[in-house]
Image (cartoon, rainbow over all chains, first blue to last red; front, side, top):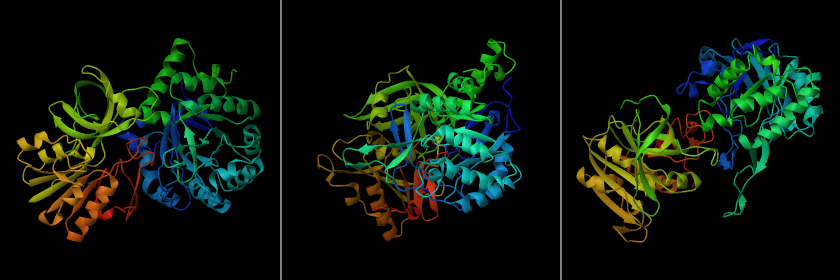
Length: 299
Length: 249
């Protein structure tokens, strides 16, 4: 009942682990069967390894958290060599999330991932709020975003999903620009650029000053953005933002999402995504639905 | 030391005692214990605070594990309301604890404040060693009574001199008397212990503290700078060789 097609790839259900919250899958594999998930997005990858940001990297807010990890990752060659072989054995769809500092890094990174056996979908990250050069810089202005999407499209033979930032000047225009530049899907939203101040030191909590806000507190805004974008584009939309329960996931699906990604809620309860899968399954049974298509995009 | 696979479970509180104005001992019913220096993520609340709290294993017994914790903020304050029979949600045991297999001879366990928490289970896991605890506290002293029964030497320092020597644990700690040093406490204290041990050529393991989110090595919010690059406090640690840690002064 929950089987979902995303860019021609079959997911056993529409629940995907969000990038940056689930490592390369095996970390949570010690706590539950991650093969039950619809897919797993890797930690954000860049062509070259990155050590990430200095200083504190996490801060809590009521019903949310801010992070400033800064794309720490082993580099795409390191991922292909050390992480992908194990990820392919987890029994779920592998979505490689890729960021970049400049256009050349994006293109070369996507080229490597596109040629790699075992990567099912490439998720282009133009929305990381935590790196100074690149990342979100490509996700604010629609024309800049269209440029990077068009450039990687030329080297990407895999389905290309573009992960959008809620910090974009106009997220609907951004989504349309990505579609026109060749994206097969868009996923939204990444974390919101946010600020926390340490009143004792009278300084920002984070060395980077701002950080990315995620968690249940962003859900209604993310949902509104997904709903707006789903009405404006013809490619699949993957909903992300504070999803914690199966009811949350269903809201995004009714607002037009083909699938959803869950991130921060996994920190609250490691098996959150399994609860969401089970909840959606029960919902379909109770409502006598043969698939979620009946209720998708009905708003 | 065999390390059981971590579990995610909601389990009952067996007992909960207040030891000082802000230090509590919480004992819970759990099927999986763990090794000394490993930790559990615990929570007993909804979405505020959002994240669970990492608590290091204080002691284990048949079907039970206990934690010694200090009230630091909203999460630990909420924990104090738990009564026997209430439930809390745990994920664990997590991380890599102290490497105790090859230890022999004279072992020092140097602790600052609530860093005393893992010392009891650690001492129980070193039956072939002569262990000396060097424990520093700000004012109130806690968590030491069991060591007398175990025949462990205990040296105490308090910052206000109300018990033991006046000063810091590092003021009364001489690494040259030991074959191995194990440390747990505030970062400046452990940096000092690591430095003293390095100068004396004594191997030292340190248990680091960090703000965590996932606890399993997936989210990378708890980095520790090491000579081999960033490692994860939750999954690669929390116990590290002191010599590999890059201490930021």
